Image (cartoon, rainbow, N blue to C red; front, side, top):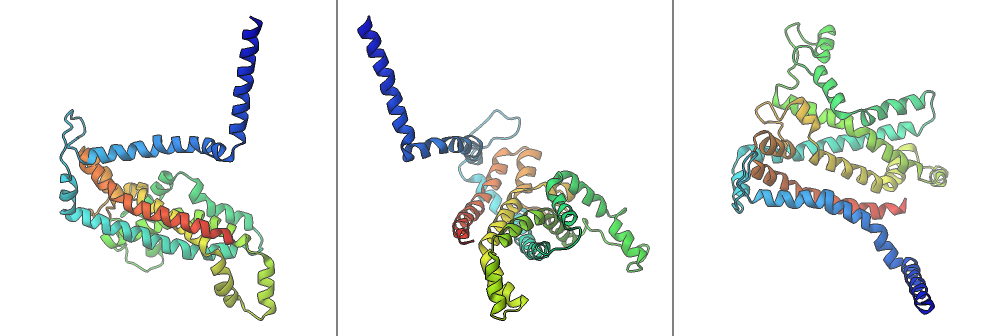
Length: 314
């Protein structure tokens, strides 16, 4: 009996030593720490992606029990529709124009917020409000501001005498004005995040570099374009790529304001996939439309990882 107990104790001690050696091994410890993140990606990202792949080659519809393989039928049918081509073009127009404007305005705001002035904390709080407030509520507020009948913008233009009493603009009823409106509100939404990221980048630049440039006689513009912008360029590109991912995938602004109208002229891939797959019930075609976003997001993710690696110079 005593021999068996000594054997059991020795076995437990051996297991503890093996576990201790395993935890001290950086290679295995790294894999252990990464396991929850990998599991999260597989469950919450990988499963919906493969389900969308499966649906896109089937004839599944909402409420139907049939699920037959149809191959690439949905993809070929989508490519022939003018609505899809318009949505694809609008996706790029919406994402690229909004991000260019965001980066320009975020640069200006970040540089202003680096200065010392009274009430700086209040300005920072007001700039962050669009980001911390629920985007659906903020967009509903914009829906009232841009209303064709009760628009506060039209009322202001009329009060200033810039338009007649019967004039005013249908901000969400004319294709070009509707696209301009949703781009403006997307900029209003993403601008706080980009500003905060650029503020962090500007704050990381050592003051000695600016002092050395001043000693060499560099003026404000020269210091900005020759020193500041090159140093924060990696951070700026990361902020822009985050905004691109939001613009490619998010549909709240367009859904609340125009629902893709008028006449599908503001439809993008994410809203088209939603209206086709969920609202119209054609899950197979909706899944196929959503998969066209995959190469765009993969390209953005690869660029983001490469730029994030280069940002270590800051």
